[in-house]
Length: 507
Image 1 (cartoon, rainbow, N blue to C red):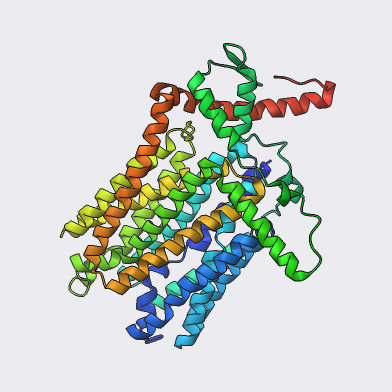
Image 2 (image 1 turned 45 degrees about the horizontal axis):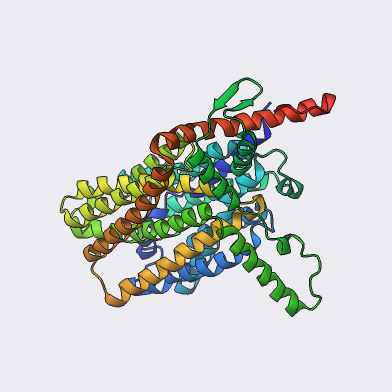
């Protein structure tokens, strides 16, 4: 019999795959300019900005209601918005209708935070590392398959762009059915931590047992011995003090004012308290900062990389030798492989994660520098593939670190806030670039400096944290922490079973 968490993960991953399996996506501009719509460049400039503004506006609403709605209704809304986008594309022709299409697409992309948050509310924290990788991999595999399929069909003249949109519509319809099949998230499960072992709970448990020179932990199948390092223990105690807990006024909000104006003000007051409570955790704050800054940079690079390729290798002169869709598909596929591989790395990133984020971000900066300097299109392609894969790897680690610290009913809020900040920064950066009319090659100089600064900052913080604990102690503890988290979860299962028999507890 399939375990509940396996069924939930399978359905969600299939949903993620099919909602992204849209082979028409890389060919949106040619489709809108083609004989079916016959729109001009100036008309497209009136259409595309609608997505940015609707995305930001709807995201502000989505991050408020996603947790309250318990995720599934928001996922269904996302699927319906994607379906509306495809139907409008197939049936519409005018600028106003296409602006409506971009609004629907903005609703779909803004509500995507429910997809990433749902799985953490639906399964035990025991499975967080695997489900984080699986859900990321499903999204990337869908995009990769769409890229390969679209490129093959167009290159072989096996289908026109209208047919690609029909395939995309069918895929989104399948996604809608899968969204309806997702299990509901039980509110009582969100409020209970009986079946979860949060990292700080393990730390607290370990600190209580560390009164003896050696900590011994018995699990159902094995015994683990670990001698705590005093410096490391002090660092962990400091982290545990910063663990995210819901503000008392947020939990005890029964005495709300009766007037609707007072209720609205009270709601936003509690919302501000909750935001302050969440981001007072230094782990969440640091990884959310990296998430927002790196996502802003990745989105901006993705928006203009095809312009850079066109400068290096003009598509009008080499129409049949342009492989942009194939490159995007390969980069996404490697990102999916990196996310999947992370599920089987028996290592906790709480100590070395920031250092790795810094090193990889510095590497990304140099890759962007090479892209801006080279006149070889295949070298530029290769650099971008590595850039995409490295971002997919790090965003998976960032998600895992954040959900390990935040409460179950705050996932949508945190993911939504991080994405909202990223989009706000991107909008500012985009406005600056458009205002000064920066050439695309010079833009990539800016992106190079952006990622180098981000990488250096996180490398310094990460090096200090690791150096303060000790490289060998940190490495040994990271592997031990991974094993202890799963061993502790097995122990709790054993305790629950034994308590039902004789009321005794195993330690």
